Image 1 (spheres, rainbow, N blue to C red):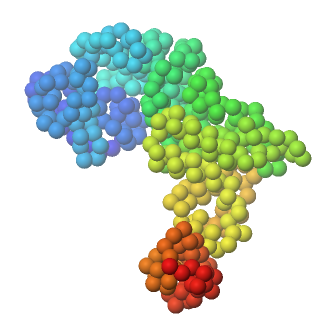
Image 2: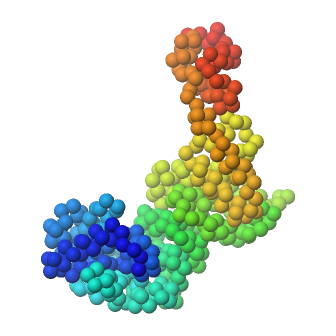
Length: 443
């Protein structure tokens, strides 16, 4: 098993406190799975026979996040611990929440969970794995199996279909035939799940290991057509072989996903969507072309991100990356001022990563990327964001009237600074008087 960290120590302490009051208390779910796989768990959950009232009394900092279901959240320095009462769920009428719950023992609790590999417990007192659903066997065999009847499990929460695919991609596992068949049958119902939950699951899928395999499975299971039809439309869209010997746009995108290593969510989404504008812009003139696909793709990306209710800052970065991914090739020929303004954009480091992966997944020519990285490495920060030589007050003192002209003048002065042709205030004032004679701009 994976080594113990502070969060696990805290989770074990929570179990000890609950046991001290006569309750059954076990580590549960994904943390047990990850420890068995030798992976450091992201989160720790505790399942217990204690009811929510007593949990809250024992842990004053705990917060109710699902009182009706016996679930509380305990904030800790490095995250949180979810503490839930053993339960069996009643009927699901909305594909998300049971109409009732019954508090039971751990065996029954295991049987209401999503997949066998997520339905195991660990007794922290004896370090014994408690497995009532053959989860350890499925881990050894490398399979994703729904607990019990897969159709029923997915009808309880349709998001479980995407989760199953994500786990298969992350761990390089296979879906069991009955689990796979149930997903294919119920795939059209995935949109009964909230956009926010789909977004979060897809973001995890993109930023975890195995994103390419997961998206390939998402497509084969019939889910991609429903959650991201614009990405599904990339299939079969051929590209000029001189630039893209790897094949169609979807194949190229999957190859890029395969090259991702612990990416930020914005970079991961930009990789997925960078060529989303190619299907609607494909033309066949002298060769296959995708004129202005980056601009079309930026508009499409914004629509997709808003449909998934992403935060505005995340949308802005993803759209900027998609819109600018073709500009990088022009950097060596840019004027110095324009080049430096581009380099200092907040998303530029991610853009370079995106374009490096883009090249590696297609023609393989990294010469421009290498040139840019060498150029950036030699830049002196003060020359990229120089202290302004002049401001609005200086222009007023020189006899200029405030107005739209100020922006034009100050931008031109900064451009000259970036080009290295203006180094001091005296030269800047002379520059302004030469290009905008004061007598033409009197107050």
